[in-house]
Image 1 (tube, rainbow, N blue to C red):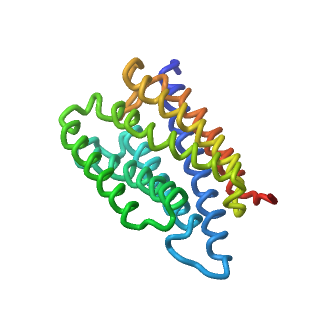
Image 2: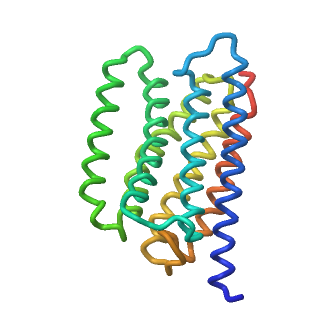
Length: 224
């Protein structure tokens, strides 16, 4: 068994570990939402739980694509990108709700403008499959950075006591670093299948650690 084969199976196992962490995160968040005295689909735990459903679907797509079970087509790429954009969109909704909770029209304007920008970029980049994922990863960084700032803001302002915003913010910071690594590794690594390279496992290690920290943060409550 050569090193490329080891890296290949390591990457698949890392995706499966990610799926397990996402499933646990979904359970913790959905349970918190379900146990609340009043429940709305706009509640933070529900939106976060729903985003993990799309993350699970994204990682399943990665496993199926990397293993060769699902052929890589333009349609499968669009489905993968759609899930990626949906998760970012849900994070943007959370961020806007925290920063401007009473200005629905302003939030709607930001969401529409953000969506139009992403659709425009995807239409331009879909004809360049070799670079689209790297560029999309880089495009996601501003949203992730603002999301991390939002979690830290909530912690220092003693908000969102239902979770631990500090741990969630630390985890989000790790995801930013992992996302940057993924964008670089896609461009400089040796392909091992689908859109992944022999360096991708390094970013996935950071991914697993970061999402694990976020899971702990979702499980804890703050006693400000």
